[in-house]
Amino acid sequence: MSRAALILALAAAPALAEPDAQALERLVKQDCGSCHGLTLRGGLGPDIRAQALGHYEAEGLMSVILDGVPGTAMPPWRPLLSEAEAAWIADYLLNGESE
Ligand code: HEC
Image (tube, rainbow, N blue to C red; front, side, top):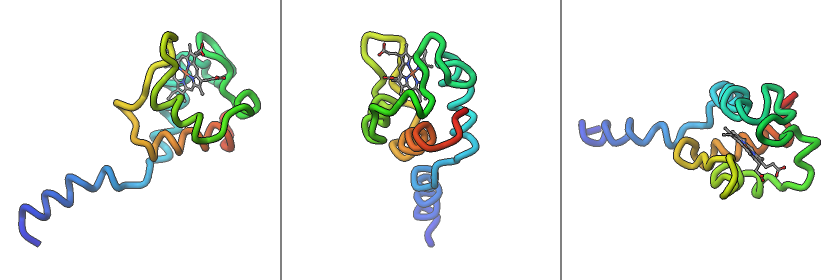
């Protein structure tokens, strides 16, 4: 592999990597938790535990995470999270042990 190709391959690697479950779990607890409460039961933002999100499909949840809720304190996470990471978080909130 040429040096240029190697650099390109390395640069592309993070985007192709599987979402880092541990880092994302930490982000949900710390960053999402700063508004939604440490146990996600609600604070400034509403309860986002699985039982409170029954009206969401994973896709709708993913777009709330990526684009936020305009006009509210819920920020868009698109600058910080890839779609795969947002999908991971949506699945984690709906099916994971977010308690
Ligand atoms: C700066 C505070 C803040 C942060 C940080 C934050 N949220 Fe929110 N979030 C809110 C607020 C406020 C709302 C309610 C918006 C509204 O009035 O509809 C909300 C709404 C939501 C909703 C919709 C809930 C519903 O029942 O409709 C979801 C899902 C959500 N947030 C997930 C997240 C996730 C996941 C993260 C972390 C990646 C996060 N939020 C980080 C403030 C925040």
